Amino acid sequence: MTSIIKVDEIQNKAGTTTLDADKLPTAYNGSAKAFATFNQVTPAVTNSLNISSVTDVSTGRGHYNLTNSMSTQQMTIPSNSGMSGAGYGGRIAEANTVSVSQYEIYTFTTSVTYADYTAGASAVFGDLA
Image 1 (cartoon, helix red, strand yellow):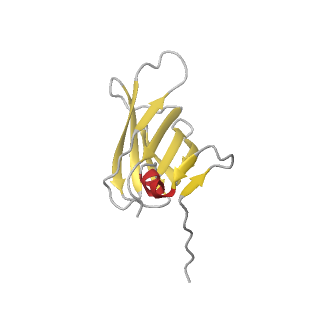
Image 2 (cartoon, one colour; image 1 turned 90 degrees about the horizontal axis):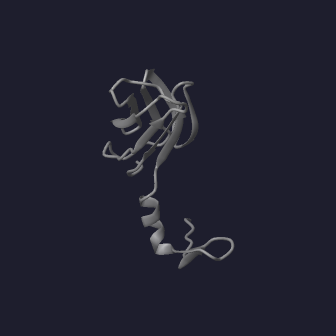
Image 3 (cartoon, rainbow, N blue to C red; image 1 turned 45 degrees about the horizontal axis):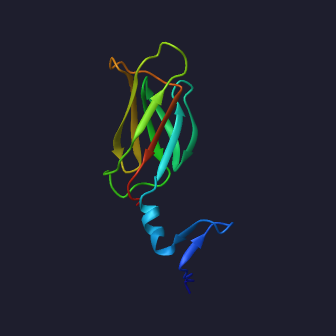
């Protein structure tokens, strides 16, 4: 037999913050389903959610593999990149959906030269499969 819990609101431990229970699906739908902070120079993922591994494709390119697939390739993937130290100027990160279980991050300078950066981040918004 399946158990069912019915509540009107959910509170934090202190009781100072309340979420109406009927708002919970809306809050979940608007949250990131995966994220990664990464260092392309090493290469290494420094923090993540729903990322099983990263494949270093080439300079400035990496494939991020999802632990749990998305329901469709129609997902939004905001990303950014950066490098510590003087003289590195502008940097750009773009994301491309490869499949429902993988996306690619491209990082490059403002002169459109692929480059590995020491700090970057990406997130995936959409529906899980």
